[in-house]
Length: 220
Image (cartoon, helix red, strand yellow):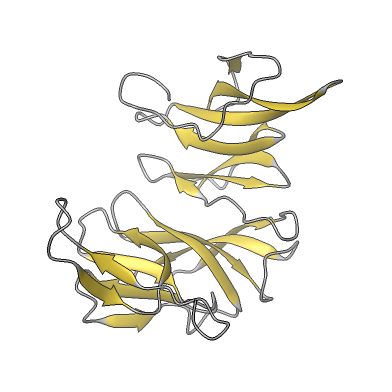
């Protein structure tokens, strides 16, 4: 924090903590490409979508030709050629936000959907399916999956806080907010991506579980 502005710097180091190096002094919300050679992120003021190499030597603005003022949560596709992100025409996400994708060279921009979030609440990122053919995202507290090959969108469930794809891409796990007379809590559910076989796997009334993620043999 410097003079009223947040200063966000990106560093890399060895896993033992040695050889710490600054990569960039104006990058927020970074995402490393699957081949680890490139990093995508947004500028500290959230006004630009940025791509740079792992050493920070080559940096380009992907959003020069896009008519947005706000970018957030860029995420690489599994094959490392496309980037999904949240964009907004204004300086903070509101009911005019969109879920979008673009090639890493800045071409083939596509808006997936409009997305609404509570004012002042950081929206969750869009997440690619393991095969890269689908994107899951939350809008208006509901979880959706869009098939990028067919354009078909499937609503999964409402009152969802966060979610995670299964490693094989056949299921999705998510934390769902449940209202009871004594208050609110989150349970963990799983569902097939066609919205069949929805199962509450925790069912712990009054106790919240959240931040769901899959391992290769179970859910945590």
